[in-house]
Image (cartoon, rainbow, N blue to C red; front, side):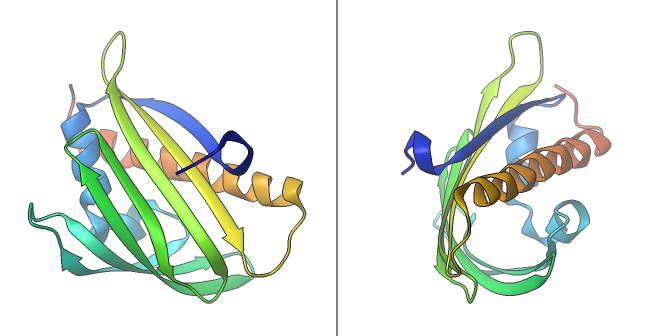
Length: 152
């Protein structure tokens, strides 16, 4: 899905089990509480395992806002991938969360993101914006999971 040149990737260790982390990722109703740019999230479809497969998101970040529709593919409790189906602002978006047990304890959550805007933007600015989104999302996920008191 990604090549090194077109993605932003970062990781964080969360003091919780992979199951607890994945449960927080799958809880779209709570996204407005911990994802700064998301003001509304609505599940439109569910997969056979009861996980969200189509999710609408209202994004309010910076000078622009957007209504987006994403498709999700869940791979057990260790990985989720999503892609953009619809947006006014973006041409494409591909993201993943991959979870692995940390060496000492907890879970290493790795987030990868690749975004293509409809409006041209200098590569360095686009990459920096992606990095900010990835870092905020990981920090928000960590706060969300650890504040729920679900330790490893």
